[in-house]
Structures are given as structure tokens and as C-alpha cells.
Length: 440
Image (tube, rainbow, N blue to C red; front, side):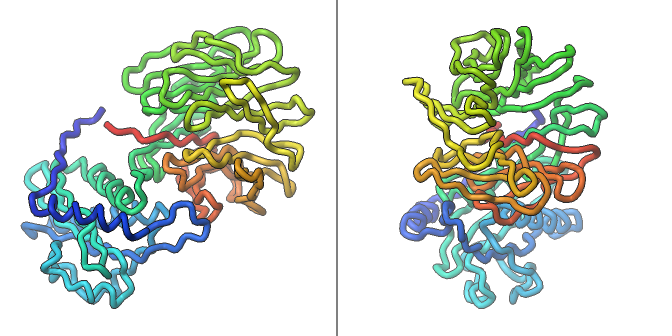
């Protein structure tokens, strides 16, 4: 892990005001995260104030403000206002409430305002960041961060997480990563990247087909299937300590899925004949068999409470999504539309499952509501769209698509809006999997 020792603290003044922020959240719903017709909140993020004012500090003040604005805009919750429309020049405004004329911001439609100050000294930096409700002239968050200059992006994301928590009640996506498969190295290898596609890193060096990455709840372990030894084996790897286990039973060892908050995972094994789903320890030992049917059972995914499992089975003749209650063993078929439905992904809230469906002459992402059993098609007329995976807060879905030619990783809201490419690397990128919160 990189050296990271910034301290987060709140001044005595801010501590008093933050108590009021909790009251503001209680009586005013800023963001309805489950609203499919979400209204984006107009937000102003002026460039930050350089405390000493020297050139390096001024440069960082602009860069940090741009990073913060970009990260918050990525969520899909906010409409970032053009700085050219601001009535106040950044150098003429303060970062605390007594020095801010909130009418200058409400006049241009800004409902939220972020201010910041930056101080540099040698290789260290300090940032003070604040979020205001402009219509209430009220401070919602105030934080001060200290650390190395190289920690700037992490400081920004830590504050963004505080912003989303204040407005929605959860910490959002800023502490998460996405694993995916890329053929760029000449073979299919596992890569990881930050939530926004930045800082991609190659994880495996198998020089063979490697597929189906799966994160443990704490983000410390990654399981995947690789043909490194000439057949599909299951690898379980601790990312930091570079240790792990291999499940190399005869036949297929594939499609791992970690049990929430446990050092256990489900995977498809075929050593006994038909591919069936088994529950394994985190070291790869079989605990018990979970499915037993004629045909193929594959691609397990767990409900957030770990009490149910969705998976793909062709027991009815074609691949369809099924669900099993782990305690009772009771199973039911979930999908009936279409003849090919695969790669389920259970939403963090537990109310919906995203999956890939063959329709309209290609593959598209659909979501099924578990309460009503109604389905919603999220992609259409954009090539093949596959392998959906929910963000840890349930607001976004990452997926792969060949809509622009080679397969790339894309992201959209949980209702199919704001579809955009996440990153572009050599080769093709497929099989994305979003981690939970990874807090170092």
C-alpha cells in the first residue's frame, strides 16, 4: 500500500456547525437515489483559494477543484455550473460562510456550493473543503485534510464521499474499484481501475485466458478463473500479500462469487459430472453442494444479506436466471422473457437483479424488480451489452459493450441513463466487476 498518512480533522467551529448539518439532512431530501427521474442538483465549484498564492499552489488549487467537480459530476447527481457564469471571482471570495454572499450563487441557480483552500509546503499539502446549501446559507460539511502532495486525489475523494453521505446517507462510490478483463497484454488478463476508470493496473500475469473476476466484501481478495494450467481453474488471491489458493479439480472450476462479509465463496465445479454450484471456504475447500439438477448451473451471485443466491441454469432448456433460498433450498425461476438470460448481478439494496438478455438481435442489459417481477430494458440499439455489475451504493451499473467497435467498459445509472465509456485501453475490455467500499 502506498504511503498515506494524511489526517482528517474538523475545527472546533466546524464541529458545532456540523451538528446542524445533521438536522439539515433530516428535514430536506437532497437526492432521491431510487428516483428513476432524478433531478440533477445545480452545483458550483469555483477554483480553490491558494493560501500563500505562489504559482505551484495556484496550479494545485485549480487542479484540485477540477478533480472534485469531475468526481461529483461522475455520480450523475449533480449539474456542475460553468465557472464563466459565476458572479464572483474565486480570488475575491472566501471559503467560510461570513465571507460568502449566497445571493451571488442562488442568482445563477446554484443550490450547492463547494469552496476550498489549498496550502503547499515542500512535499506536503493541506486542503480545507466545505459544502454549503446556498438557499439556506448553511454549512453542510467542513473538513480539513493534511498529507503528501501525491495524496491529493485521495483527499478529494475522501471529501466527495463525505458529500454523498451528507446528501444520501451512504458513502457512494469513491472508495471502490472495478476489476475487468483486458486482452491488451496479448492474453486475457485481470486489471483493476478506480471507480472512474483512472489508474488502471494489471493484476495477473498468467499469459493465458483469465476470466470472471470477483471481489471479496473487504476488497482484499480477488477470485477468478484462469487457463494458466491449460484448463479452467479457480484462483483465490490476496491482492496485497500476493498469496492465495488454487482450486484445480478435474473439469470446470469457474464463476466465483464471494459470500457477503464472509471468507467463503460459491463457484461452479464439474468434477462430479454436470456443472453444479458449490460453497467453498476462502482457501478453496468444499463446504457443501448448493445446486443439483440436470444441465448446467453457473454464474452464482449473492443477495446482500447472503441468504439467497441467484444463478444461471439451463434446466428448463435455455439459460435462465434462477433464485435459491440457502436456508430452505427452495428454488424458483426468475426470468421467462427471451431464450437466453445470463450473468446476474444483485443490487446492494437487494431489490433488483441486473442481467444480460439476448434480444433485438443482440445482447442487452435488463433489470428485474424482485417484488413485482417486472423487467426493465436499460440498453437498446447499441451493439452487444453484457456483464452488468452494480456500484456499492446501487446508483450505477458498469458493463461491457461493443457499441463503438471493440468491447469497452461503460457505466450508466441503475435506470439506464447517462451511459458513457469508462476507459479505453489497448485490446478489448470485458467482464467488469465493481467492488464494495475499500477503506485503507
